[in-house]
Image (cartoon, rainbow, N blue to C red):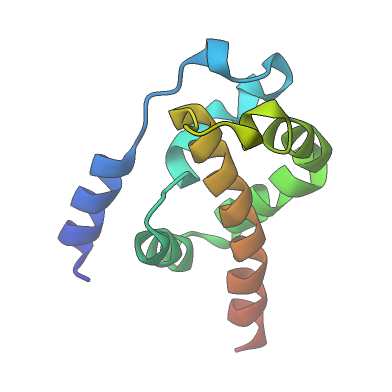
Length: 111
């Protein structure tokens, strides 16, 4: 995928987050969710591979610092609904991106 194609794809996947649908204790993660909550796996992985070490480290810290709060929300009542909110999906994917950042950073450091 060319950089222009990646940028177009990333732009099309940025979701607008309604703060009212996100637990208050997670509001400060909204910018990260908008940046890394890329639903398309391949596009997200390319974005992670292009990320700086600092960005990856910051992303990894999300699960370390907010993992329990994310689990409470993402495993809560909305997990059993038929239709997930855009916010729920975006934060679920942010959690995935945080996990994937560990792999990308470890791989990068092993070379």
